[in-house]
Image 1 (cartoon, helix red, strand yellow):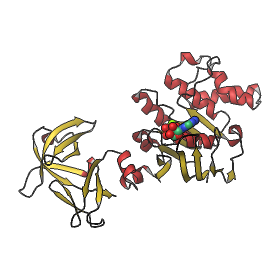
Image 2 (cartoon, helix red, strand yellow):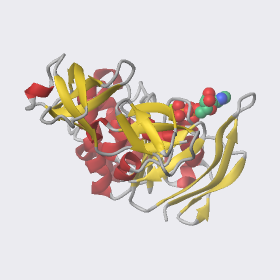
Image 3 (cartoon, protein in one colour):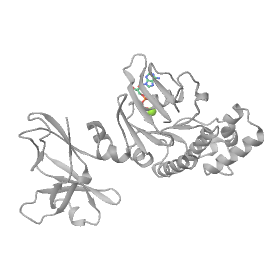
Image 4 (tube, protein in one colour):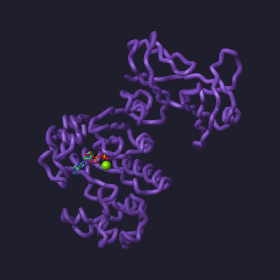
Length: 342
Ligand code: ADP
Ligand code: MG
């Protein structure tokens, strides 16, 4: 086990708990995504692991050792933050060499290590530049090289590419995953972007209001969310509220089985757009809806369909099925899968 967090509590004066009884375990070599909305406690949790702040209760172990009394430098962690600006008055070389000079390594060793790191982050030849001569993506790659220079066993990344344009951000996160695999480190990648977390992480820790909602593989949190919050926050979801009657949940023309819930209970149904199937109307038994609008999503379309005057649902449709994309068109609709939450 690389990192064990148990019953961590963090309160800032005046506020409610930023972290409230947080426990989880990260395995050696894993890349974990901390995913949650702004204010859910991601940065606070990362800062406690890094040793930049101290918890009010609970314990953190790294490789079995309680590290709560250790300074950040002694924990073997490297970190990169969104706004963790480089030292402006130092060249790229000196920025990366910083931690090595602190460790009093010999100049020849430092030079070799910095050049290895510049290769690793794909910035060879840029050692004489200054931070103001770098793009945002380059600066964050230098920040990563600086974090990795002292060979930490754990790498902490707090929304490192949040300020960078979408296309470059996508490239950078793919690349950061490759670096993680290449050097065999344990990493935590904080993001509020579910697409980013699902793409990059081996497992995702979903946070909400200072608590862990779920820790699981991207597939687990997407396909088997443990709470309404996770179901709604991770991935696209149609959400409907209703009261169970005779073991059924009425959704327009559909009566979804709700026999696991009490009659009279208010529940929420979560239906992924990918689990809503549209076809051309072919039989009198088809449940029929009307296409309102199709929005382009790359390889497929998100199609909003009106079921009744008050019920509307989104389906994903392959872009080749043009006859299902026309506003006003009547389409047959079926629900392949859904989840009910209290
Ligand atoms: P996230 O990184 O998920 O956006 P944070 O960990 O930054 O969330 O914040 C969690 C909660 O703790 C928020 O309510 C925030 O306002 C509060 N908080 C964070 N840092 C401080 C601080 N230094 N002083 C007071 N409150 C703070
Ligand atoms: Mg944050």
